[in-house]
Length: 115
Image (spheres, rainbow, N blue to C red):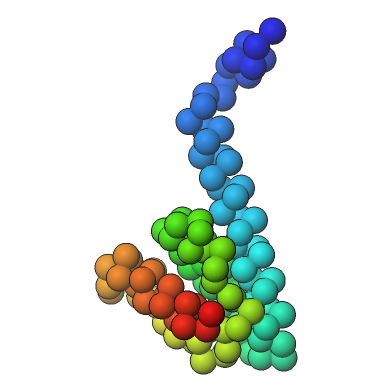
């Protein structure tokens, strides 16, 4: 019996999209954990909404950059001021005040500068 006869309701495209979302979620969780560890006590200065915004923008960044580039990012080295800047960038994407590709490039530059 092959896979398709067992799961006719799920096609390859859906499996691919689910796999992508899972990989994105795992990568984002790892980045957020590294950020939290690196920020130490400053992490407590972030609100729940800010933490969610950071997680969202890191997910967008993961989807945007090449895996090799993502793997070289050092989220643990980001400081509170860097995080504030990234949150400003996240707000620009959410409010559609600037092109999201430009904002993601700027976000990437902030993280890379800490590498």
